[in-house]
Image (cartoon, rainbow over all chains, first blue to last red):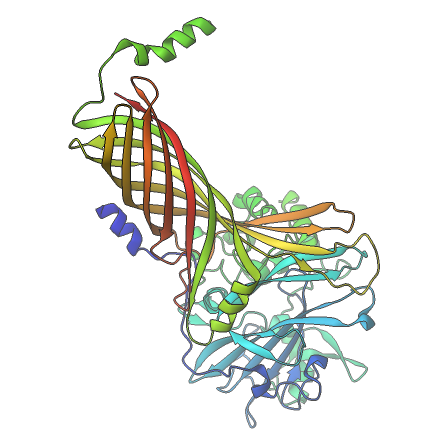
Length: 314
Length: 235
């Protein structure tokens, strides 16, 4: 009985829940992120689009990323990692699927919008699930499985139990050294060419021009390779970039999986990552979807093949 | 060889012609049941609409239980039964129509999602004899079990207009508490079929005392209604 009581007192679910330190709105529309018809995802003037050179896999969902910086402030660059974000920053990520990925004119289905809001030097999370009419989205903190279907680029019908994360899941992935931090917008992951107003421009320069980022010499910032760009980057570079964006937020010395000895950050020397000693384990866990621990309900077939190819070279 | 094996298996049964001991460890058993299982939700304010939506869309499903037990008898009426086993609990979404922007008949028409929760269970039950006559014993049981979470398996099942199905499944562990406790109660019947073998049938109800999720804003309790059947071997 004592053993039972000890067991019952244990609350380990593999996640790290960190409570918000600020109130968040119950409706997404209250943030006035989008103008006009909300389902057009047309950002209002305060919110600027940004892109990542390598993205986290999220069951093939399309993503729109926006950032709002309070007036009179900018992001302050610090080497090629995360910049300093001023209080009042809002990061917005909206997940959606084209009804037919071969033909975007057939419309899209918006599933959820996730916010990271910085207040009083702390990041807070908020997830909003879009209604069936696609007119607004409601705050959800508990997580939910939702049936999502679309036609993929090969013309095949896909049906999945898409998972909208709970706050506990959000804060687990974003947990670093006891605090919540953004994952994607590191300068090296922004240091790529984007097209704005029909013109190709380095994104760091563009963000500076928009008043979002302080002045930074983009040639001095490293680049996180776009893992799908086989023409520009080597297999090793692409695989390490994939592991960085998909795994390293937990598998780093300050993440929630710090105790298992893997450090999958791109900047870590291969010899210090422990990848060579865990080749088959990494592949097996990706194949069985044991990893990623949260955030996916289907195997990233292309990503898995990339990692398999890379492991064969080690 | 087969004859020898048969004799060996029957030897414990035929060698002794005594009733179950009056005290101490008196029997071992193997039990199993097919269960109706479902969940109740206790979500905090602000998430009640999610609970209501899930209650509209989700229904119970079949699960099952298998476990072995050891019986300790400490009086003519009272016994303790403890053991180890495996339980499978489930609920599923109702079928929903899928909408496509194509008329392609090869696209599935409907789908549903089935969630299965797998646990190792360590039950500990008190068994009280209500009535005993010849080979029949009527009893009531109540107890608790500690369950160790193994995985949640989710299957997405799609059906096509021609009636065929396709599905894919995946397992996850995150978000669910490793240890949960369940309360259990039932009434049943033991029937002594041979000197040492007793058949048991026991309708029962079981419910988790603690949420299967670690999220304090979204508690989820699983319950099961089943008829356990099995056999005990008395020492």
